[in-house]
Amino acid sequence: MAELHDLSAVRLRDALRHGEVSALEAVDHFLSRIEQRNPLLGAFITVTAEQARKDARAADTLRRTGSGSLPALLGMPLAFKDLTDVAGVVTTHGSAALDQKPAAADGALVALLKGAGAISLGKTQVPEFGLTAYSENRIAPPSRNPHAPSRSSGGSSGGSAAAVASGLVPFAPGSDGGGSVRIPAAACGLVGLKPGRGLVPAGENQGDPARLVTSGPLARTAADAALMMDALVPGATYLDSLGRGPVRLRIGSTLDSPWAGSFPFTPDQEALDALQAGRELLEHAGHVVDESVVRYDNRYPEAFTNAWTAGVGSARISPHREPLLAPLTRTFRRRAQQRSPAKLQESLALLRQFQHDTVPQYAQWDLMLTPALAQTPRPVGWFTGTAHGGERWPSAQWPGDADEDYRKQCEYAPWSSMVNVAGLPAITIPVHWTGGAAGQGLPMGIQLVGPTGSEGLLLQVAHQLGF
Image (cartoon, rainbow, N blue to C red; front, side, top):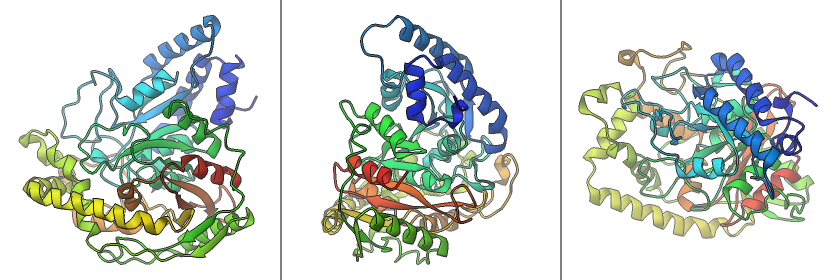
């Protein structure tokens, strides 16, 4: 058998189920990988080795002695981003301003995956309160891109993406409220699926008045993502249906973005190259790809920002600890607290209208196609205005300007947040590498957006394209 970290999640699941490898052997292998590689990558904030080994022994006992069907992910190692409560483990939310107390109980997402037999190896790096498209904060080293450690792994599920891409775990759940699965998946060369609204528990316990956040898999292949989705959606058969790929879809390709009015941007050539590579793969698979125009309400950026930052405004933070917040968090928290309830409700109403206006435009096509990102993965420290590569920033020296930081993020990932507002499923697929071949240079991807209930179709298309 190949090294365990080289196996797909599906193959590892089969090896565990058939007794080719024990859960304890698998857990020990991945814990050793974390010990070796995490100091460079910063993917994990907390490693729960003792509890993981205890859970692995229990999984091995159940496999030996259990009768009937076994849990779908029995013995499978994974990790949870540190916005999600795992019982007995501190949830830092990536913030130095919070009291660090162990969570009293598992969150809904954790309970779901533990119930399927998965074993948590720890908590992964996130931006403060999950607010940004990069995973850097004041409490731990930044999460780095396994393909180029000077580059960011994205955010907010950046630590989880780095862990999957570097073989520290076979796959991992992420949460996505504005691109937080798809952005790091694209940056790290993974398949990242954002399910439609309400299909999967959000996995985060901060306020989300617009219901933007959902959880989905970060995986190396569509099959691995489908395996996790089968555990996340009771009764689902995503994995079994992968071979029934669609014969001919009409796909609308667009560079239109609701952010363009506020933050005009020009996609990097690498983003356009990825779009062209994706188009060619889709056409080779028998699909029809044509240019599409999408018209967006120019009031979207303010409305989305108001809804996106409402949760940090209501977070329980002692006044004397607010100076420990990063500039972006502190700025948006202050603005959220100064915003009237009526203004927030106005923004939420506009986003509902945005959904009503946008979904029918997308529905003219079977799927919508965009680049996943407008730029290559950014250097660590780029968003905060410094290329500082040290382990962490002293609290009083965190650099950067909040509005400039936010502008950079919106220009980096201009095609993600509106999918959350529309409540639709979307997938990112790593179709292009800047070095010319898979694994060379930096990964770049495409995003496919589907209608409500099309998670299976999106996984089928990704699998059809060879991912």
